[in-house]
Image (cartoon, rainbow, N blue to C red; front, side, top):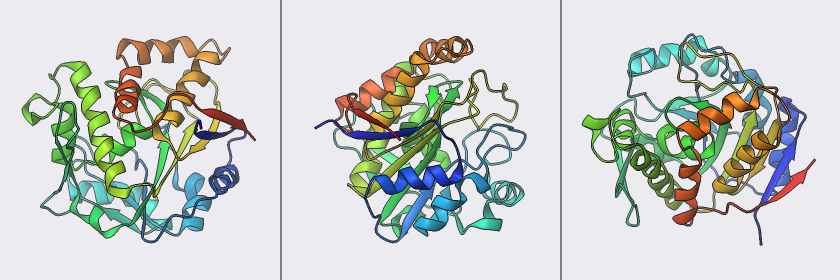
Length: 287
């Protein structure tokens, strides 16, 4: 059977929770809730108030990891200040997974480019995972969605460099591009293997800039908001988002598509499907 992807064009905090409940799945405690804390200066990331209903319903802990590039989130001290500045710790319990080392090393026996993934050691405290993704473009990956959150998002600062460099952190910005994309798929496999079936994915197609929430200086959104998607399949949900962008009649779609295609963004989805992480065919259930 094709995996279900629940979809609504109504983008509100309550609709996020409504679609989450449609999965009819209960995540066992303790739940790690992965989202993007937002780089200081970025205007597009989704704020705490937007995610509040679903986070409070699940009752989990918001988790993040330090970045591998300069900014206000690349050290534990700066990242904790950013988390407070952006309001996350005002509303939720927050765990910076790699606040203190050593990293937790996850094996990827069937990885195409990398055979291990480095994540914050605090991940070991959790039994399930809710992945909250802001779907938009990305300067290197072409797009950012569920697979990026699973891989780069959950990787430690060192792990991010390791994935970007396709196993060589010294080549964080210079590794062969498709190898980097395939490494993201490999890293995603390690997280799925770790949590098994205890993961739910939510993608929100809002504030869709060609740039990521990790950009302090980001372009404004280039096209109209599309909607909210929820699924138990990370490949299906990302593929559905891509398909919705291509199907849109918004003239700004061409700018986002150029970003996705110029970085071969679809290759991450293809690589993840090849690893058996999910299906590119799906049943879109419009609510």
